[in-house]
Length: 208
Figure 1 (cartoon, rainbow, N blue to C red):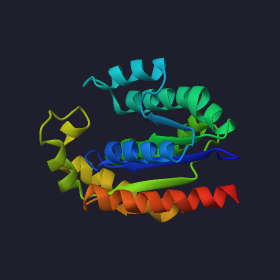
Figure 2: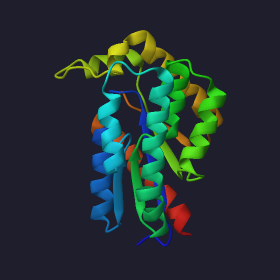
Figure 3: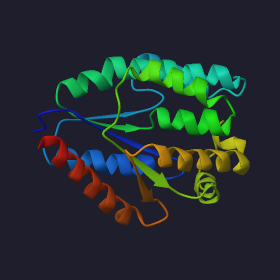
Figure 4: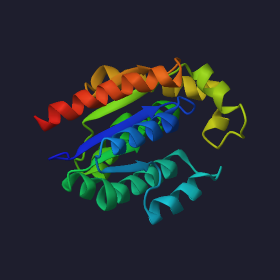
């Protein structure tokens, strides 16, 4: 239905509800008869899935972690995201280069200038039309993660780390007009109503 592709990214801390909302959004758009590609980082390609397994290890240096995320991202852009957009599809992606700035930059302390350079190279100019930033306090995100499952390597970093990441997202939002803050502390239903409205406005704008 869409004459040009539309790229939607969901961002936020671990525990912010990205996966739940991405699944709802994809189901809603497919119900409206849009062609939708649902992807997440890291992963989405055979190479990206192998990189995801590497990233679960605890012995990576911050710089090695950065380059693995970027390698996975470039494969995803080249093999999935750009071709889907060129076919006029909607791409719904959980995480993109905003996560790298927040987690590896503000969280890990790697130089932001370096991260911006490698992000630019990895994404090859493929930019989202809208970024849905699900905003939850670090304390709430961590509490959600610790309910019902074992935290992964990133989550094991603890509250101080996630607070730095949270600050990174808020700094990014001040500089990136495509980022739309979504209050992630509300019910999943209320959150999705707002997300649906934002995405519908973007689709209308892009199809005019």
